Image (cartoon, rainbow, N blue to C red; front, side, top):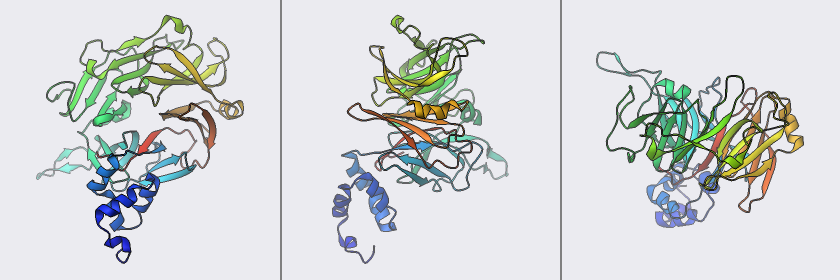
Amino acid sequence: MDSSPLNRLPEETLHQIFFQLPLRQIATYKCVCKALYSALSSPSFRHLLSTQPTSLSLIALKPSDRHISPFPTLHAFDPALNKWLRFSLSFLPFSSLHPITSSDGLLYLWAALPALRNSNTTHVRNSSQKSLVVCNPLTRQFKILPQLGSAWSRHGSVLAGSGNTVLVLTELAILYYSESNDVKNGDVNCGGVLSNWLKFTSNLPSKPRSPVLVSDVILALCDVGSPWRSQWAIFKTKITNMEKTKQWVRVEKRQWGDIFGILKRPRLVKARNDKKVYMVGGLKSSFALQSSCTTILILRLDLESLEWEEVGRMPVEMYKCFMESSKFKVFGGGNKVCFSAKRVGRLVLWEESEEGKAEWRWIEGLSGNGDGLCRGFVFDARLDAVP
């Protein structure tokens, strides 16, 4: 770019030129040369982008636990271009990187931090310990959150929200992190958890399934049935209620009837509206214990009126591929819900437009996931997001 006329333009003019481009093109031009990368990564250009926030809505895949690549990469699908993208994570100086969720343009990963030694060569930090790392793959900025034990990374569900709010949820406890510490004044250091993480006991009746964070409310499915027959229910709590002894309350309405009885292996998925949430599962052919499913159903719950509505049924020709699989996964968020199954070799995407029109389609080109049983999340990439 040294000999280019662009190099003679004032930085402010250069910013105004690229500010008119779609985010996809800005991200592409950042890779052209170091000068453009520097100009389009500057704080002044990120501030300009923040005046008119734009994001690139992608479907990101979690890597397989059994296949940790020496060249860590985030694999993401762009539904608008029907194209797979790869974001290098090699700028992160950690090992065993495992992307798990995203929020407001930031990516959250579990990472093994390098072991530290003091002057007597004794370990100060165990290499097996894990920490959450938050980063922006587009700008290559990152931040390490206070360290946690490896058990939290194995058994905890990570939820991320606005304002760099992070929660790690298990059946017995909730860890909460926020730079503002808006739940309680001061830091808490309990149970071996470092300061800045607030720890609260949990009164959930069983292990939480597919928890989601909707604004300041945590929602989770729990099995309240017997060892012989599952019975699912939705529980909720507010972040501000986590100090209470019995912070979780059951979400229910008498008019629901057997809404949970018709779905097999239900899952919650965050909707784009903060007042609604999706519940997805196999539609049972009967109420018998071992009844087969006829398709996969997507329901949407209005969290204010507690009214359900059906928003999608997987087409029969698609579901036939899932019938042969003993297990399938559901993930997504916003206006997208994705499905994967063993040995199918591709994903199914349900997507709803701004006008409320829904579409089902296949996502081809899936690779590197062994048996094809993928997990993932929606990643709204942004250049102005700062860890």
